Image (tube, rainbow, N blue to C red):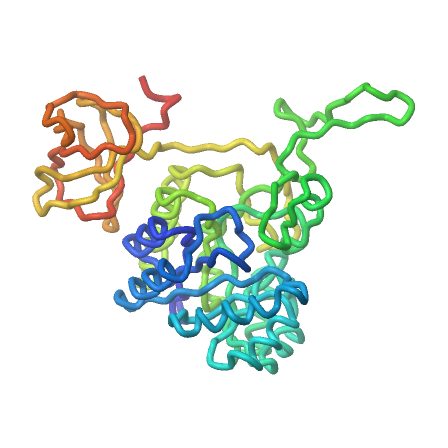
Length: 410
């Protein structure tokens, strides 16, 4: 690899996900306030929580980028600018913005706040990148429709600008997410952060002269889902992305769980470290792909990274090879008496895994202490309880316990 390793940028829909991203190797996270981000139904951060989040990231030498990428109307602009000023005072490292008017207003009113241009701006060429450079922006997040080859050419033409690209997670069927389906069909605007995802609904065809006769459009046993995009997974193309000179690799998922964030962050951190050390990426790739499959995901492909997608749509079903059982709330140097917050049922004697920043460790669960009652039990199906269990490895706060997905478990 001739280029510096890119930043690994991970989603933080709430403080729990932020902590998971930080624990498993994120260089930076992105998250939203209660207004003005395109994920209105993520947990998001009020000013106090945002202050805590930024302090936590900065304390670890990492960065926090604030999503402010709605398309604001005139009657929202004063509040938008006020929120940006609050974010500046809190110390966020940049605001992610989509709208040209919003960019101009923030450069005028909050010039100290660095700006990144959101993927929602649909930037696909060097001329557009130059426009944003001249407006005072530091980084452009390219539209998902941009191939790696085109991204590399943009970097060659405008080398002074930082270029970011999505590498993993859900994709929108509309051009860079600029969709009106949700607003038209559910009264919730995707461009205001309230998408109801009607692209994931199941549809049938009705012929004009046969009202009431609903005909499914079949392609396979699950039917055809003409609006529902595959997830993006660029793990196989990571060497090409690094070689292209991409500054930041972004994982989608502010609506996802902390377990999802931990799993995907850990896999990409391991992959980037392997490339930095000159390791055998091809040999490691099957294991990395298997690790990604342990988090909930749809069928995936490489999107537009190599050009036009070969098979861009599929059923809105989720796959997950491992189930989140618990996470460590108090680690132990020798693993003995590790405290876990229970999420899902498991039992003594079951083969389970501990997901840590250093790798995945497999062991057999032992009887554990139910802290609430002092009982030693073999199983417990009550999520939210604290248990203590001996683990044959060192554990750290933030590690995750997982097992085979429930419908594969006895």
